[in-house]
Image (cartoon, rainbow, N blue to C red; front, side, top):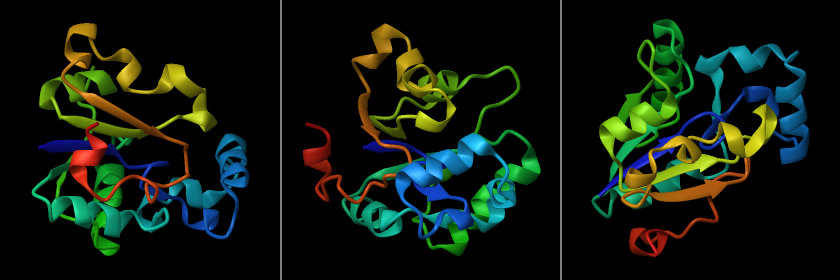
Length: 163
């Protein structure tokens, strides 16, 4: 089983978001003035994301990460942040030139996609799953969480997540 999980806003957040409510973090992102928003190497886990993903990985799940970054240096910064915080091993995917998020999903065809609701950048219309071809949506389970709300509340059992 393959799970594709979005990184920024779903698993990790800018370091200056720590100690703030989800609503305050969304406002920080919308405002765009906090320098740590653009320091991807310093991003930190949201809640117990590392432990949740390790629990799933221990059940045999292949984890694929998807970043919004497209510049090689920024992609490497996200990779560095994931490694620094001991996220389970998994391929870090990103959009190639002329590719949209849905193209990445359709290319790797995960069993489950976990993403946030994109509240800070425009909501539902910005979500990846909304743009996946209808004939392929039937093969991919969508799990949507609140942006910066974390994945701690999702079931530990991968079989429960697929229901």
